[in-house]
Amino acid sequence: MRRRRRQLWRHPGLRRRRACRVVSHSQTSRRGGMASASACVPSRRGPDTTAIHGSEGGVPLMLTVQSFPTFERAYGAVLDQVVNRYWYRNAPRGIESREVLNVGFQLNDPIQRVAWLGSRRTNVVFCFAEALWFLWGRDDLAMMAYYAPRMRAYSRDQTTITGASYGTRLFGDIDEDERSQFDRCLELIRGDPATKRSFMVIFRPWETTDPAHPDVSCAVGFQLLARDGLLNATCYMRANDAMQGLVSDVFSFTLIQEFAARLLGLDVGVYGHLVGSMHLGVKHLSRAQTVLDEIRQPDTVPRRFRFPAMPTDTGWDDVQALRGHEYALRTNEMRYPPWYIESLGFPWYWQQVLLLFECYRQIAHEPEQSLDPVTLAALDPGFAWLVRHRWPSRMPTTGGSA
Ligand code: 5HM
Image 1 (cartoon, rainbow, N blue to C red):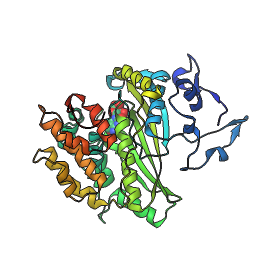
Image 2: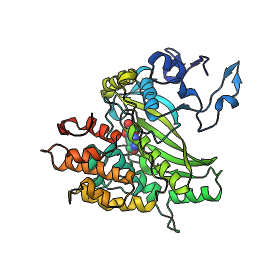
Image 3: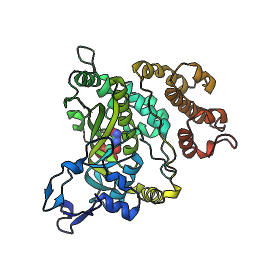
Image 4: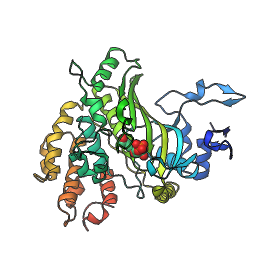
């Protein structure tokens, strides 16, 4: 894999102007320093593709997508591509963008689903809320608009979200035997672990009948593939916004993968993310460049945190039991101090999610006050880091670490 490989790819947008040299990942790594050589090396998860590749004129053919150890590495590579080596400048629905087609990557450790970047401050509260909103099969705007007011723009009736409510298709649409698509996939895998029919359809054919509709599903489908005791997943997307949608989509789908693995008693395998149109709005270009600059400075990137793993005995009971608590916090019915959360009997992982929701309750409902240092101190250090960087103006002057 050390050998550098150059390919000349011609694609329609560049045909008359210039050929685009597609730089192999190892080159990108050497140039920008944002992806380590390990990104090319098959990990303990997934097959050793170097052993089975074919060749054309002595050049190894690698038809699978590039692997990355964590989402942060993949994120850097995607941003570099859309910022510095985009294929098209266009403006679908009037939104000026840079675009690359047929982008895919694989995460060898999908639990490491967060980029710990000060310049791209992941809203981990929103990410968990959206993943749970999916798992609960919901489509109400009320819940998601609380965590992300911008989602109001997706809703025509200001009550429901019809396209981006992926959970309604994965977990909500129930067949005559009261099984969701997700349930049926798990059943298929239990019956035949090598099955490749464990596919869930998300995009609905009639979604594009109204070209002016603000919300058309970007995810097309989601597949679970159990192999050698690992549960792998692939998410198929027609389109992905590299600055915003990508971050929360990878978070949610890898979390659903991890949850499915727990239900099946399998370990988490690799996660593939395959996108028809990967793009970046021009208004996010300078921000994306700042993120790339941060990623390229290894010393400033605090890759010291590990995203915690979901407990192996997680079941639907835990996920459903969180629903009432999320509602109580969102509607400010009551405060949830850490001692109270601890008394509820949830495993530590889900207690952390409730602590994050309590943090956000304070941020949303107590705008005059700083975050309670006791709540902040009870958070997992990585989650506390994300909260601190997301809402710096709401931090207490004492308590918790930087
Ligand atoms: O015109 P279009 O329907 O493709 O615009 C939707 C925009 O939201 C695109 O930039 C798409 O990539 C982004 N998006 C995303 O990245 C939207 C959703 C919601 O379905 C998503 N990820 N989950």
